[in-house]
Image (cartoon, rainbow, N blue to C red; front, top):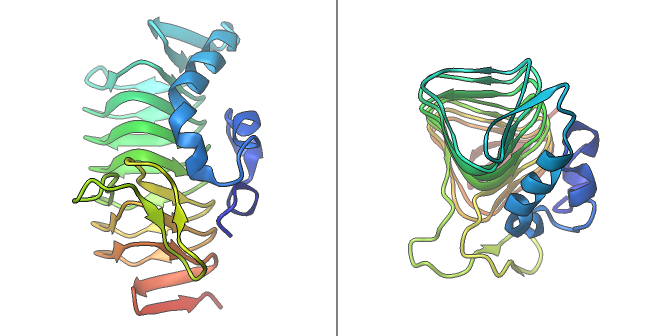
Length: 219
Protein backbone atom coordinates (compact mmCIF):
# COMPACT_ATOMS: atom_id res chain seq x y z
CA UNK A 1 0.00 0.00 0.00
CA UNK A 2 3.04 2.31 -0.13
CA UNK A 3 3.04 2.72 -3.89
CA UNK A 4 1.52 5.70 -5.69
CA UNK A 5 -0.81 3.37 -7.59
CA UNK A 6 -2.15 2.01 -4.31
CA UNK A 7 -2.60 5.33 -2.50
CA UNK A 8 -3.88 7.82 -5.05
CA UNK A 9 -6.45 8.31 -7.78
CA UNK A 10 -4.36 10.34 -10.22
CA UNK A 11 -7.43 11.68 -11.98
CA UNK A 12 -7.59 14.33 -9.25
CA UNK A 13 -4.33 16.23 -9.70
CA UNK A 14 -2.44 18.20 -12.34
CA UNK A 15 0.61 16.22 -11.23
CA UNK A 16 -0.75 12.91 -12.60
CA UNK A 17 1.72 12.46 -15.44
CA UNK A 18 4.62 13.45 -13.19
CA UNK A 19 3.63 11.07 -10.40
CA UNK A 20 3.27 8.15 -12.81
CA UNK A 21 7.02 8.33 -13.24
CA UNK A 22 7.65 7.14 -9.68
CA UNK A 23 6.92 4.03 -7.65
CA UNK A 24 6.73 5.61 -4.19
CA UNK A 25 5.23 9.08 -3.57
CA UNK A 26 8.15 10.49 -1.59
CA UNK A 27 10.36 10.03 -4.66
CA UNK A 28 8.44 12.92 -6.22
CA UNK A 29 9.31 15.47 -3.52
CA UNK A 30 12.59 16.65 -5.01
CA UNK A 31 11.05 17.76 -8.29
CA UNK A 32 7.92 19.61 -7.15
CA UNK A 33 9.36 23.07 -7.80
CA UNK A 34 10.35 22.24 -11.37
CA UNK A 35 7.02 20.48 -11.93
CA UNK A 36 5.02 23.57 -10.94
CA UNK A 37 7.06 25.86 -13.16
CA UNK A 38 6.61 23.50 -16.11
CA UNK A 39 2.86 23.14 -15.53
CA UNK A 40 2.37 26.86 -14.97
CA UNK A 41 3.89 27.81 -18.28
CA UNK A 42 1.36 25.57 -20.06
CA UNK A 43 -1.81 26.62 -18.20
CA UNK A 44 -4.69 28.03 -20.21
CA UNK A 45 -4.63 31.80 -19.72
CA UNK A 46 -8.39 31.85 -20.24
CA UNK A 47 -8.68 30.21 -16.82
CA UNK A 48 -5.49 31.06 -14.93
CA UNK A 49 -3.93 34.41 -14.11
CA UNK A 50 -0.23 34.79 -13.33
CA UNK A 51 -0.72 37.18 -10.42
CA UNK A 52 3.03 37.52 -9.84
CA UNK A 53 6.03 35.77 -11.43
CA UNK A 54 5.47 31.99 -11.35
CA UNK A 55 2.31 32.29 -9.23
CA UNK A 56 -0.75 31.08 -11.13
CA UNK A 57 -4.26 31.38 -9.68
CA UNK A 58 -7.43 30.05 -11.25
CA UNK A 59 -9.96 32.78 -11.94
CA UNK A 60 -12.59 31.01 -9.83
CA UNK A 61 -10.31 30.69 -6.79
CA UNK A 62 -10.78 33.00 -3.80
CA UNK A 63 -7.59 34.36 -2.24
CA UNK A 64 -7.77 36.57 0.84
CA UNK A 65 -5.84 39.84 0.47
CA UNK A 66 -3.83 38.95 3.59
CA UNK A 67 -2.64 35.61 2.18
CA UNK A 68 0.94 35.24 0.92
CA UNK A 69 1.53 33.27 -2.28
CA UNK A 70 5.20 32.42 -2.73
CA UNK A 71 6.63 31.31 -6.06
CA UNK A 72 6.26 28.93 -7.63
CA UNK A 73 2.71 27.85 -6.88
CA UNK A 74 -0.54 26.97 -8.61
CA UNK A 75 -3.94 27.52 -6.99
CA UNK A 76 -6.70 25.47 -8.60
CA UNK A 77 -10.32 26.15 -9.50
CA UNK A 78 -12.81 26.94 -6.73
CA UNK A 79 -10.07 26.75 -4.10
CA UNK A 80 -10.22 29.08 -1.11
CA UNK A 81 -7.03 30.54 0.38
CA UNK A 82 -8.05 32.20 3.61
CA UNK A 83 -6.84 34.99 5.89
CA UNK A 84 -3.09 34.97 6.64
CA UNK A 85 -2.37 31.72 4.82
CA UNK A 86 1.37 31.44 4.10
CA UNK A 87 2.28 29.54 0.95
CA UNK A 88 6.06 29.61 1.04
CA UNK A 89 6.44 28.22 -2.45
CA UNK A 90 6.60 24.97 -4.41
CA UNK A 91 2.93 24.30 -3.68
CA UNK A 92 0.62 22.66 -6.20
CA UNK A 93 -2.88 23.15 -4.79
CA UNK A 94 -5.70 21.38 -6.59
CA UNK A 95 -9.31 22.30 -7.26
CA UNK A 96 -11.91 22.88 -4.51
CA UNK A 97 -9.29 22.89 -1.77
CA UNK A 98 -9.21 24.92 1.44
CA UNK A 99 -5.98 26.53 2.64
CA UNK A 100 -7.09 28.10 5.87
CA UNK A 101 -6.30 30.66 8.49
CA UNK A 102 -2.57 30.78 9.32
CA UNK A 103 -1.87 27.58 7.37
CA UNK A 104 1.67 27.19 6.00
CA UNK A 105 2.46 25.13 2.90
CA UNK A 106 5.91 24.34 1.53
CA UNK A 107 6.98 21.86 -1.17
CA UNK A 108 3.67 20.05 -1.35
CA UNK A 109 1.15 18.52 -3.71
CA UNK A 110 -2.47 18.84 -2.60
CA UNK A 111 -4.85 16.78 -4.69
CA UNK A 112 -8.35 18.11 -5.44
CA UNK A 113 -10.76 18.66 -2.52
CA UNK A 114 -8.02 18.61 0.14
CA UNK A 115 -8.76 20.60 3.29
CA UNK A 116 -6.08 22.18 5.47
CA UNK A 117 -8.44 24.67 7.13
CA UNK A 118 -7.03 25.76 10.49
CA UNK A 119 -3.48 26.32 11.78
CA UNK A 120 -1.84 23.51 9.83
CA UNK A 121 1.77 23.16 8.73
CA UNK A 122 2.23 20.91 5.71
CA UNK A 123 5.76 20.61 4.36
CA UNK A 124 7.48 18.16 2.00
CA UNK A 125 4.28 16.14 1.80
CA UNK A 126 1.63 14.86 -0.60
CA UNK A 127 -2.04 14.90 0.44
CA UNK A 128 -4.41 12.71 -1.55
CA UNK A 129 -7.89 13.37 -2.88
CA UNK A 130 -10.38 14.52 -0.23
CA UNK A 131 -7.89 14.17 2.60
CA UNK A 132 -8.41 16.45 5.58
CA UNK A 133 -6.09 17.84 8.24
CA UNK A 134 -7.96 18.64 11.45
CA UNK A 135 -7.36 21.93 13.23
CA UNK A 136 -3.80 22.26 14.51
CA UNK A 137 -2.54 19.03 12.95
CA UNK A 138 0.89 19.28 11.33
CA UNK A 139 3.52 17.39 9.41
CA UNK A 140 6.96 17.30 11.00
CA UNK A 141 9.36 17.12 8.08
CA UNK A 142 12.86 16.98 9.62
CA UNK A 143 14.11 14.51 12.24
CA UNK A 144 15.45 16.01 15.45
CA UNK A 145 18.87 14.46 14.83
CA UNK A 146 18.82 15.69 11.20
CA UNK A 147 19.52 12.20 9.81
CA UNK A 148 17.91 10.93 6.62
CA UNK A 149 14.31 9.77 6.85
CA UNK A 150 13.51 6.05 6.75
CA UNK A 151 10.02 4.68 6.10
CA UNK A 152 9.28 1.97 8.66
CA UNK A 153 6.40 -0.41 8.11
CA UNK A 154 5.82 -4.14 8.57
CA UNK A 155 8.47 -5.07 6.02
CA UNK A 156 12.09 -4.00 5.77
CA UNK A 157 12.70 -0.28 6.36
CA UNK A 158 12.97 1.79 3.20
CA UNK A 159 15.77 4.34 3.00
CA UNK A 160 14.50 7.46 1.24
CA UNK A 161 17.73 9.44 1.01
CA UNK A 162 15.72 12.50 2.07
CA UNK A 163 16.48 14.84 4.94
CA UNK A 164 13.09 16.55 4.53
CA UNK A 165 10.04 14.31 4.28
CA UNK A 166 6.79 15.06 6.07
CA UNK A 167 3.86 12.74 5.37
CA UNK A 168 2.18 10.93 2.50
CA UNK A 169 -1.59 10.84 2.95
CA UNK A 170 -3.64 8.59 0.72
CA UNK A 171 -7.05 9.51 -0.65
CA UNK A 172 -9.84 10.10 1.91
CA UNK A 173 -7.52 10.26 4.94
CA UNK A 174 -8.83 12.09 8.02
CA UNK A 175 -6.27 13.45 10.48
CA UNK A 176 -7.66 14.43 13.89
CA UNK A 177 -7.10 17.80 15.52
CA UNK A 178 -3.69 18.62 17.00
CA UNK A 179 -2.04 15.47 15.71
CA UNK A 180 1.63 15.36 14.70
CA UNK A 181 2.68 13.30 11.70
CA UNK A 182 6.37 12.58 12.25
CA UNK A 183 8.94 12.47 9.41
CA UNK A 184 8.38 9.54 7.08
CA UNK A 185 4.74 8.92 7.98
CA UNK A 186 2.69 7.13 5.32
CA UNK A 187 -1.07 6.79 5.82
CA UNK A 188 -3.06 4.50 3.56
CA UNK A 189 -6.34 5.32 1.85
CA UNK A 190 -9.58 5.73 3.82
CA UNK A 191 -7.85 5.83 7.21
CA UNK A 192 -8.76 7.95 10.23
CA UNK A 193 -6.26 9.29 12.76
CA UNK A 194 -7.57 10.08 16.25
CA UNK A 195 -7.09 13.62 17.59
CA UNK A 196 -3.91 14.32 19.60
CA UNK A 197 -2.09 11.42 17.94
CA UNK A 198 1.66 11.14 17.46
CA UNK A 199 2.03 9.13 14.27
CA UNK A 200 5.20 7.53 12.95
CA UNK A 201 5.78 4.96 10.22
CA UNK A 202 3.15 3.28 8.06
CA UNK A 203 -0.55 3.23 8.95
CA UNK A 204 -2.55 0.68 6.90
CA UNK A 205 -5.37 1.67 4.58
CA UNK A 206 -8.99 1.34 5.75
CA UNK A 207 -8.05 1.58 9.40
CA UNK A 208 -8.56 3.71 12.52
CA UNK A 209 -5.45 4.85 14.35
CA UNK A 210 -6.15 5.30 18.05
CA UNK A 211 -2.51 5.09 19.11
CA UNK A 212 0.62 3.22 18.02
CA UNK A 213 -0.53 0.08 19.82
CA UNK A 214 -4.21 0.32 18.89
CA UNK A 215 -4.85 0.40 15.15
CA UNK A 216 -8.08 -1.31 14.13
CA UNK A 217 -9.60 -2.16 10.76
CA UNK A 218 -12.66 -0.24 9.68
CA UNK A 219 -15.79 -2.38 9.63
